Length: 302
Image 1 (tube, rainbow, N blue to C red):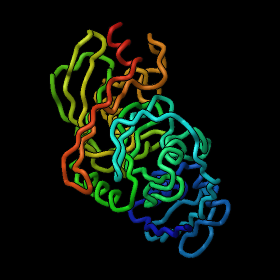
Image 2 (image 1 turned 180 degrees about the horizontal axis):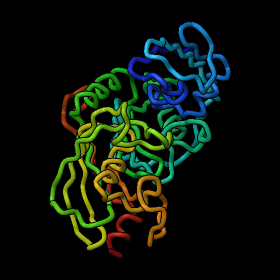
Image 3 (image 1 turned 180 degrees about the vertical axis):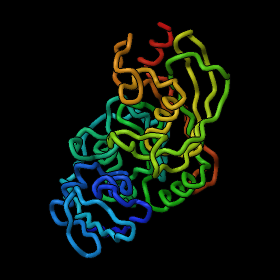
Image 4 (image 1 turned 45 degrees about the horizontal axis):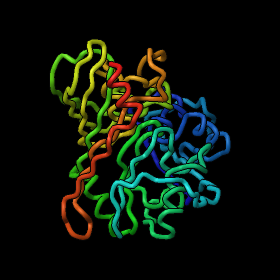
Protein backbone atom coordinates (compact mmCIF):
# COMPACT_ATOMS: atom_id res chain seq x y z
CA UNK A 1 0.00 0.00 0.00
CA UNK A 2 1.29 3.45 -0.92
CA UNK A 3 2.11 5.72 2.03
CA UNK A 4 1.95 9.51 2.24
CA UNK A 5 4.01 10.97 5.09
CA UNK A 6 4.17 14.58 6.30
CA UNK A 7 6.93 16.30 8.27
CA UNK A 8 7.66 19.81 9.52
CA UNK A 9 11.20 21.21 9.34
CA UNK A 10 10.96 23.26 12.55
CA UNK A 11 14.45 23.88 14.05
CA UNK A 12 16.11 22.14 11.06
CA UNK A 13 17.02 25.24 9.03
CA UNK A 14 19.97 24.64 6.72
CA UNK A 15 19.85 20.84 6.87
CA UNK A 16 19.80 18.87 3.61
CA UNK A 17 16.38 17.42 2.90
CA UNK A 18 17.67 13.91 2.07
CA UNK A 19 19.42 13.69 5.44
CA UNK A 20 16.41 15.09 7.31
CA UNK A 21 13.99 12.58 5.75
CA UNK A 22 16.31 9.60 6.30
CA UNK A 23 16.47 10.55 9.99
CA UNK A 24 12.67 10.79 10.18
CA UNK A 25 12.14 7.46 8.37
CA UNK A 26 14.65 5.26 10.16
CA UNK A 27 13.90 2.04 8.24
CA UNK A 28 14.83 3.54 4.85
CA UNK A 29 18.37 4.15 3.64
CA UNK A 30 19.56 7.57 2.54
CA UNK A 31 20.14 6.28 -1.01
CA UNK A 32 16.48 5.10 -1.08
CA UNK A 33 15.34 8.57 0.05
CA UNK A 34 17.51 10.20 -2.64
CA UNK A 35 15.88 7.98 -5.27
CA UNK A 36 12.42 9.02 -4.02
CA UNK A 37 13.45 12.68 -4.39
CA UNK A 38 14.84 12.03 -7.90
CA UNK A 39 11.59 10.27 -8.85
CA UNK A 40 9.54 13.29 -7.74
CA UNK A 41 8.05 11.59 -4.68
CA UNK A 42 9.14 14.37 -2.30
CA UNK A 43 7.78 17.90 -2.21
CA UNK A 44 8.38 20.94 0.00
CA UNK A 45 5.46 23.32 0.38
CA UNK A 46 3.87 21.61 -2.61
CA UNK A 47 6.91 21.90 -4.92
CA UNK A 48 9.37 19.20 -6.04
CA UNK A 49 12.97 19.68 -4.85
CA UNK A 50 16.44 18.17 -5.31
CA UNK A 51 18.31 16.06 -2.75
CA UNK A 52 20.63 18.94 -1.83
CA UNK A 53 17.77 21.32 -1.01
CA UNK A 54 18.44 23.14 2.28
CA UNK A 55 15.46 23.31 4.63
CA UNK A 56 13.83 26.41 6.05
CA UNK A 57 12.19 26.47 9.48
CA UNK A 58 8.60 26.57 8.25
CA UNK A 59 8.95 24.03 5.41
CA UNK A 60 6.21 21.41 5.15
CA UNK A 61 7.53 18.19 3.61
CA UNK A 62 5.46 15.49 1.91
CA UNK A 63 6.96 12.09 1.13
CA UNK A 64 5.22 9.49 -1.03
CA UNK A 65 6.47 5.93 -0.47
CA UNK A 66 5.25 3.74 -3.35
CA UNK A 67 3.91 0.25 -2.80
CA UNK A 68 6.70 -2.30 -2.64
CA UNK A 69 6.58 -5.01 -5.27
CA UNK A 70 7.21 -8.28 -3.47
CA UNK A 71 7.77 -11.49 -5.42
CA UNK A 72 5.66 -14.51 -4.51
CA UNK A 73 6.85 -16.02 -1.22
CA UNK A 74 6.84 -19.80 -1.60
CA UNK A 75 6.86 -22.62 0.98
CA UNK A 76 10.19 -24.46 1.24
CA UNK A 77 10.90 -27.80 2.90
CA UNK A 78 13.55 -26.50 5.31
CA UNK A 79 13.93 -28.41 8.62
CA UNK A 80 12.81 -26.50 11.71
CA UNK A 81 13.97 -26.99 15.30
CA UNK A 82 10.60 -26.59 17.06
CA UNK A 83 10.80 -26.02 20.82
CA UNK A 84 7.05 -25.66 21.44
CA UNK A 85 3.92 -25.91 19.30
CA UNK A 86 0.14 -25.95 19.67
CA UNK A 87 -2.83 -24.77 17.59
CA UNK A 88 -2.15 -21.06 18.35
CA UNK A 89 1.61 -20.59 18.53
CA UNK A 90 4.97 -22.19 17.99
CA UNK A 91 8.48 -21.32 19.19
CA UNK A 92 11.35 -22.19 16.88
CA UNK A 93 15.07 -22.32 17.61
CA UNK A 94 16.46 -20.22 14.74
CA UNK A 95 19.89 -21.26 13.45
CA UNK A 96 22.75 -18.89 12.70
CA UNK A 97 22.72 -17.44 9.20
CA UNK A 98 18.96 -17.74 8.63
CA UNK A 99 17.01 -14.57 7.80
CA UNK A 100 13.65 -14.37 9.59
CA UNK A 101 11.47 -13.02 6.76
CA UNK A 102 11.86 -12.25 3.04
CA UNK A 103 13.46 -8.92 2.14
CA UNK A 104 15.44 -7.59 -0.84
CA UNK A 105 18.25 -10.06 -1.47
CA UNK A 106 16.62 -12.74 0.70
CA UNK A 107 13.41 -14.07 -0.85
CA UNK A 108 14.21 -17.75 -0.36
CA UNK A 109 15.69 -19.82 2.45
CA UNK A 110 14.14 -17.67 5.17
CA UNK A 111 12.35 -18.80 8.32
CA UNK A 112 9.06 -17.66 6.77
CA UNK A 113 9.60 -19.96 3.75
CA UNK A 114 10.13 -22.85 6.18
CA UNK A 115 7.10 -21.90 8.31
CA UNK A 116 4.83 -21.74 5.26
CA UNK A 117 5.77 -25.33 4.43
CA UNK A 118 5.38 -26.56 8.02
CA UNK A 119 2.17 -24.68 8.92
CA UNK A 120 0.53 -24.63 5.49
CA UNK A 121 -2.08 -21.83 5.60
CA UNK A 122 -2.14 -21.65 9.43
CA UNK A 123 -0.17 -18.46 10.01
CA UNK A 124 -1.41 -15.04 11.10
CA UNK A 125 -1.64 -12.47 8.32
CA UNK A 126 -1.36 -9.26 10.33
CA UNK A 127 2.14 -8.36 9.11
CA UNK A 128 1.38 -8.99 5.44
CA UNK A 129 2.32 -11.57 2.83
CA UNK A 130 6.08 -11.38 3.46
CA UNK A 131 5.86 -11.82 7.24
CA UNK A 132 3.10 -14.34 8.01
CA UNK A 133 3.11 -15.39 11.66
CA UNK A 134 6.04 -13.16 12.58
CA UNK A 135 5.53 -11.20 15.83
CA UNK A 136 9.15 -10.20 16.49
CA UNK A 137 12.54 -10.72 14.85
CA UNK A 138 16.12 -11.60 15.70
CA UNK A 139 19.13 -10.83 13.51
CA UNK A 140 20.34 -13.22 10.82
CA UNK A 141 23.43 -14.24 12.83
CA UNK A 142 21.65 -14.34 16.20
CA UNK A 143 20.41 -17.79 17.20
CA UNK A 144 17.62 -18.95 19.46
CA UNK A 145 13.96 -18.65 20.42
CA UNK A 146 11.51 -16.95 18.10
CA UNK A 147 7.76 -16.77 18.68
CA UNK A 148 5.38 -17.41 15.76
CA UNK A 149 1.58 -17.00 15.70
CA UNK A 150 -0.78 -19.27 13.76
CA UNK A 151 -3.81 -16.97 13.82
CA UNK A 152 -4.63 -13.27 14.04
CA UNK A 153 -6.18 -13.45 17.51
CA UNK A 154 -3.03 -14.97 19.00
CA UNK A 155 -0.96 -12.39 17.13
CA UNK A 156 -2.96 -9.45 18.53
CA UNK A 157 -2.66 -10.74 22.11
CA UNK A 158 1.06 -11.50 21.94
CA UNK A 159 1.86 -8.25 20.12
CA UNK A 160 0.18 -6.45 23.02
CA UNK A 161 2.34 -8.40 25.50
CA UNK A 162 5.42 -7.32 23.56
CA UNK A 163 4.23 -3.71 23.60
CA UNK A 164 3.64 -3.86 27.37
CA UNK A 165 7.06 -5.53 27.98
CA UNK A 166 5.49 -8.57 29.67
CA UNK A 167 7.19 -11.16 27.46
CA UNK A 168 10.39 -12.58 28.98
CA UNK A 169 13.32 -12.38 26.56
CA UNK A 170 16.64 -13.50 28.03
CA UNK A 171 19.73 -13.73 25.85
CA UNK A 172 23.25 -15.02 26.39
CA UNK A 173 26.29 -13.38 24.83
CA UNK A 174 30.08 -13.26 25.04
CA UNK A 175 31.47 -9.73 25.11
CA UNK A 176 34.92 -8.20 24.84
CA UNK A 177 36.58 -7.13 28.08
CA UNK A 178 35.96 -7.74 31.76
CA UNK A 179 32.82 -6.03 33.04
CA UNK A 180 33.42 -4.16 36.30
CA UNK A 181 30.03 -4.90 37.86
CA UNK A 182 28.28 -8.27 38.22
CA UNK A 183 24.97 -6.72 37.13
CA UNK A 184 23.94 -3.55 35.38
CA UNK A 185 21.26 -1.75 33.39
CA UNK A 186 21.79 0.23 30.20
CA UNK A 187 19.18 2.93 29.56
CA UNK A 188 20.02 4.61 26.26
CA UNK A 189 17.73 5.51 23.38
CA UNK A 190 18.46 3.80 20.05
CA UNK A 191 17.86 5.11 16.55
CA UNK A 192 19.38 5.09 13.09
CA UNK A 193 23.07 6.05 13.10
CA UNK A 194 23.42 9.73 12.08
CA UNK A 195 26.07 8.91 9.43
CA UNK A 196 26.07 5.17 8.69
CA UNK A 197 22.49 4.32 7.79
CA UNK A 198 23.08 0.57 8.04
CA UNK A 199 23.85 0.87 11.75
CA UNK A 200 21.90 1.84 14.85
CA UNK A 201 23.28 4.17 17.52
CA UNK A 202 22.69 5.55 21.01
CA UNK A 203 23.61 8.98 19.57
CA UNK A 204 20.71 9.27 17.13
CA UNK A 205 18.65 12.47 17.52
CA UNK A 206 15.54 10.40 16.75
CA UNK A 207 16.25 7.48 19.11
CA UNK A 208 13.52 5.57 20.93
CA UNK A 209 13.83 4.52 24.60
CA UNK A 210 15.67 1.23 25.12
CA UNK A 211 16.52 -0.68 28.31
CA UNK A 212 18.81 -3.71 28.64
CA UNK A 213 19.65 -5.51 31.93
CA UNK A 214 22.79 -7.64 32.05
CA UNK A 215 24.26 -10.17 34.49
CA UNK A 216 27.76 -11.66 34.43
CA UNK A 217 27.73 -15.47 34.18
CA UNK A 218 31.46 -16.22 33.74
CA UNK A 219 34.61 -14.14 33.48
CA UNK A 220 37.45 -15.14 31.13
CA UNK A 221 39.87 -12.23 31.55
CA UNK A 222 39.61 -10.57 28.12
CA UNK A 223 36.05 -11.81 27.58
CA UNK A 224 32.87 -12.09 29.67
CA UNK A 225 29.92 -14.47 29.30
CA UNK A 226 26.74 -12.56 30.16
CA UNK A 227 22.96 -12.91 30.25
CA UNK A 228 20.87 -10.00 28.97
CA UNK A 229 17.19 -9.35 29.54
CA UNK A 230 15.29 -6.95 27.30
CA UNK A 231 12.67 -4.49 28.50
CA UNK A 232 12.34 -3.06 25.00
CA UNK A 233 13.02 -4.58 21.58
CA UNK A 234 14.85 -2.06 19.40
CA UNK A 235 16.78 -3.12 16.31
CA UNK A 236 20.24 -4.51 17.30
CA UNK A 237 19.49 -3.43 20.91
CA UNK A 238 21.89 -5.69 22.83
CA UNK A 239 24.62 -5.28 20.24
CA UNK A 240 24.37 -1.47 20.30
CA UNK A 241 24.01 -1.18 24.08
CA UNK A 242 26.97 -3.42 24.91
CA UNK A 243 29.15 -1.64 22.36
CA UNK A 244 28.11 1.72 23.80
CA UNK A 245 29.62 0.83 27.20
CA UNK A 246 32.85 -0.45 25.66
CA UNK A 247 32.03 -4.18 25.69
CA UNK A 248 30.92 -5.12 22.14
CA UNK A 249 29.76 -8.66 21.47
CA UNK A 250 32.46 -11.06 20.33
CA UNK A 251 32.23 -11.66 16.58
CA UNK A 252 30.13 -8.54 15.92
CA UNK A 253 31.93 -6.87 13.02
CA UNK A 254 29.37 -4.07 12.80
CA UNK A 255 29.60 -2.74 16.35
CA UNK A 256 32.89 -4.31 17.49
CA UNK A 257 36.41 -5.04 16.23
CA UNK A 258 36.62 -6.28 12.63
CA UNK A 259 39.26 -8.87 13.54
CA UNK A 260 38.63 -11.69 16.03
CA UNK A 261 41.01 -14.40 17.29
CA UNK A 262 38.20 -16.93 16.73
CA UNK A 263 36.67 -18.00 13.41
CA UNK A 264 33.11 -16.80 13.95
CA UNK A 265 30.13 -16.14 11.71
CA UNK A 266 28.70 -12.97 13.20
CA UNK A 267 28.03 -12.10 16.82
CA UNK A 268 27.96 -14.60 19.72
CA UNK A 269 24.40 -13.79 20.73
CA UNK A 270 21.71 -16.36 21.54
CA UNK A 271 18.03 -15.83 22.44
CA UNK A 272 17.87 -18.43 25.21
CA UNK A 273 14.68 -17.94 27.25
CA UNK A 274 11.32 -16.88 25.84
CA UNK A 275 8.36 -16.64 28.21
CA UNK A 276 4.80 -15.51 27.48
CA UNK A 277 1.20 -15.87 28.63
CA UNK A 278 -0.59 -18.23 26.25
CA UNK A 279 -3.10 -16.27 24.10
CA UNK A 280 -5.92 -18.80 24.67
CA UNK A 281 -5.37 -20.28 28.14
CA UNK A 282 -3.51 -17.42 29.86
CA UNK A 283 -1.01 -19.99 31.18
CA UNK A 284 2.60 -18.77 31.44
CA UNK A 285 4.85 -20.74 29.10
CA UNK A 286 8.63 -20.51 29.16
CA UNK A 287 10.84 -22.08 26.51
CA UNK A 288 14.59 -22.64 26.81
CA UNK A 289 16.63 -22.85 23.61
CA UNK A 290 19.89 -24.68 24.43
CA UNK A 291 23.12 -22.95 23.49
CA UNK A 292 24.19 -23.85 19.94
CA UNK A 293 27.25 -26.05 19.45
CA UNK A 294 29.54 -23.23 18.28
CA UNK A 295 28.70 -21.21 21.43
CA UNK A 296 29.36 -24.15 23.77
CA UNK A 297 32.67 -24.94 22.05
CA UNK A 298 33.75 -21.31 22.31
CA UNK A 299 32.99 -21.28 26.05
CA UNK A 300 35.11 -24.42 26.46
CA UNK A 301 38.03 -22.74 24.61
CA UNK A 302 37.77 -19.66 26.80
